[in-house]
Length: 259
Image 1 (cartoon, rainbow, N blue to C red):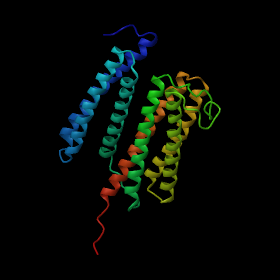
Image 2: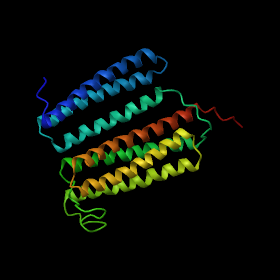
Image 3: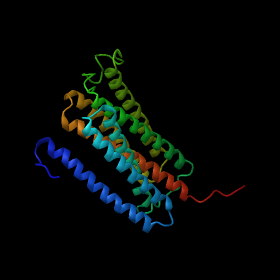
Image 4: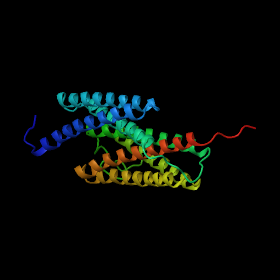
């Protein structure tokens, strides 16, 4: 139950202990959702969905160990973690202190919700591909940056090069989309909390791209690779929070007069 916490055992067992603590904390959150938000039953249902995600996540974590890090199971383990992160970000945003924006977003609110949600979905897909790149040992399939095998479009002669190049390509597309969203949010004079989230998302995605390059340049050193995953999680949470707050703002706006 408590092995000697040395070497890799420390990180693996610490991962399990933190996971157990997460289940307990979120179980308490679910109980609070049942007792404190009876007027919003969707919150309790979302918490139950989160508990189901955690249970499935734990099962896949066990399968990952039993079958010795199979590519698809390990990547699914990561994907479930990111889905849970998105869910709890929605819950935290919806149940936190009410946001009273100093100006009305109008129709821009729904557009921000859609675009931020699309950006979050793109980051989620990008993270899954990144998980496959890592578990299939394709991280150095393109050992040079910013080019890949000395070309903008490398010869896609095997699955590892194709996967690695796809990860880079989607990363660039995500960066352009998120930076464009951030600039648009500033241009339409969105309320300050949304502008700050948009700017944070832009800063994170630029950092994410830079860390991707650094990871390759350092032959997948532990620190840049770990931060690459961490920034992806932070970027996903930022975009989900942006979409949630914009949607709440849209729902709180008074109906437009008829005629």
